[in-house]
Length: 403
Ligand SMILES: NC(=O)C1=CN([C@@H]2O[C@H](COP(=O)(O)OP(=O)(O)OC[C@H]3O[C@@H](n4cnc5c(N)ncnc54)[C@H](O)[C@@H]3O)[C@@H](O)[C@H]2O)C=CC1
Ligand SMILES: O=C(O)C(=O)COP(=O)(O)O
Image (cartoon, rainbow, N blue to C red):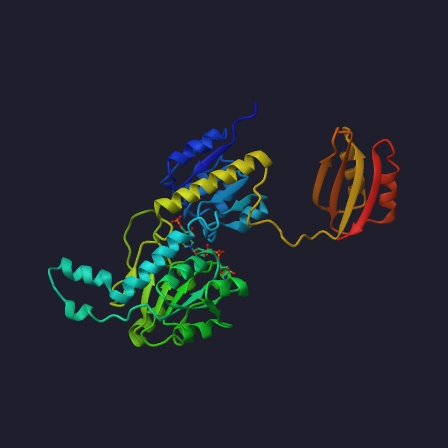
């Protein structure tokens, strides 16, 4: 008997969207408080695993023997062992762009909070002190230069909001798009250091992958203007905390963070961080994506990806598909649509020791004939094409092309 595919949701998820998973014919298991160490057990029987920041380790991937798809209900995929998933042929997808506005709103909130010292104002009021004298000192944002590192979905959303504050915008990105930058009024910087030197406020919107680890260290902060502002709502692994502390103490750098390295697992727990006690610091609890609007948009996207997966057998936007195909040749076989034809073709390909990299089979109207496109690791010898052509009862035509 074929059992329904099981989707395990191992993080907090809007409950009304759980019904939508069920309407796809999926069996839903909801574990909102699962930790990374519980996940190998929780996901053991799952075909589809949906997570927010809960870490999906190699151990989970290897324990979940039925797993076919991991959906990161968010943007950053640094919490998932994508390499382990790829090694077992498991798709990994994220929900790009669906929480960008929420992160951009928080970024602007941090920038304003740092300029006007809103949390410090509130703390003094709570302690029963009126201190207009101290808190009357603020710069204002109009005419200040905001330097955006990363001009993807969130960087662009921040740029649009900063433009409303009449700020000047400079940007640095790995994937320059001059027309887009121009349309957003962003002046491109050719290096990260140029951005550091030109900006009054730097805001970081790049992934926390291994290449970007520690990108913001002493050499970057020492190029920032004295008294400038650094905001990171992307990942804690991107900045060097000790260098940031030094810059705060020696160069009056103001710092706004939503992300830390490390962060406590789960929703609540003790937290002791060296920057939090410094006067120029404003921070939040990795809540960039945590608005109802963003979580509904993320949940709707996770459901859409599941629907696509159930209907097509694959997600169309997995992050771990080999983009540069290793195939060197295409073997195109037009054949009769009969039992065993593809098996005969593949047996001959195997006899010649050729690895199949990709393969599709398209049926023509009436289901009498089909075309198989088999992409091979190397060009086959002429003898193989001849052998295939000789299968006259099964094969209509054989073509070989390099690719
Ligand atoms: N605080 C929070 O709750 C959230 C944090 N994030 C973080 O924000 C990051 C960015 O998100 P999106 O804008 O949606 O991603 P995105 O993929 O749309 O944009 C990232 C951009 O960064 C660029 N980039 C990568 N490395 C770079 C480098 N070294 N220098 C300059 N540019 C570089 C890429 O070319 C790309 O254009 C995510 O990877 C995630 O870590 C995302 C959502 C919520
Ligand atoms: O989407 C992202 O990359 C985030 O960092 C948001 O994480 P969260 O969904 O709040 O655990």
